[in-house]
Image (cartoon, rainbow, N blue to C red):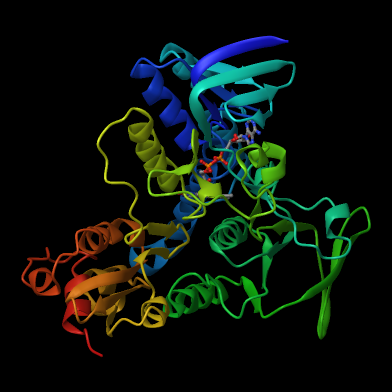
Length: 452
Ligand SMILES: Cc1cc2nc3c(=O)[nH]c(=O)nc-3n(C[C@H](O)[C@H](O)[C@H](O)COP(=O)(O)OP(=O)(O)OC[C@H]3O[C@@H](n4cnc5c(N)ncnc54)[C@H](O)[C@@H]3O)c2cc1C
């Protein structure tokens, strides 16, 4: 069996794995990067990037539809063919990772194709090869779409995100299962391109990880765009007759649709990775790591499976920390009190840190501040839906969480991430000058509203 001996082997080249392998190779280590599918991982081929291209197109359509209200007549004919061609040609290079492989190889990383399994500490089996990692192994295997255990569902040709980004036509009707960020983003895109969309959510609201005000505002917008949202739903079975899907629901009429898209969470298979070789629990949902991303001596874990947020920015943040640790550089370790997240619906929903409920559950002395975006001049000018909500630890006089909803909610969030991350005193935030008339000026109104 051919043996490749390196200093560090990176298993899974998602955004973090790719960045970390590059960094270590540039620092002079011998690095192998093992990838079973596409170098770059989920984000550039099936997730963040293609979906945001689809959302950009859907937003352009929605803007054009609003033009008669604001400026006169406008005529735009939706053409999904253009969106599909852009995703295929410009965004994913037809799901070809040659450019990413070239980038890694020119940085000095040895790219090994195949599925890696740890057979003993520091040793990987990859098809008919063995990779020996003298200094250690970094795991960045990401997650796969989970299909809930609803009778019949797995036997039908449902879409996951990996199929939806490759869609060459918009189905006439679409049921989206899941009201988290992924489900909400896809629901709005396909609805704006003409699908009759029904979103089924088992929870009692959209975006349950975010402030309830954000989910409620999005539900209002969805209703205005004829997206049917059914919350608190239990699907009892799904079948497909060769043409249409039928979903049976508990205590409600069945629903039929031309297509079903499952956006109901992610799964990972730790046994397949062989982490038991390090004495770690293979039946767990994720891997527990310390603040330097160490799961065991000589084993680092980054990205979705480290369980601190399934985001590309998290994978890359953790990659930088693990790389510093492997290179023996001074680094304070990971901090998670100001993790930002953005759902790129319209309106865009950005959040950082703790929600009000989480802050109260943590026993903090909470004050909240709220303002609708429509009461800001820019919000009024844009006829924009949105809000700012702030969560303050009143004992410390600092923000511990914030939500920004609006046409550029994720961009406005930047100022709030800084405030939470750097623990800037609220008194100081109140003394800042906020440019007029910007969306971010609404932060000043929300600060003025802070109360118990
Ligand atoms: C539809 C959708 C939209 C999203 N949008 C956003 C967004 O806008 N912003 C954001 O921050 N996040 C977004 N995410 C989340 C984001 O895609 C992930 O958090 C991100 O890809 C980071 O994942 P990761 O680094 O853990 O690994 P991944 O990107 O999942 O990559 C892991 C890689 O490891 C490989 N691999 C797995 N096991 C092995 C093995 N045993 N051997 C070899 N290779 C292996 C896989 O093939 C894969 O290529 C979105 C997710 C989805 C599904």
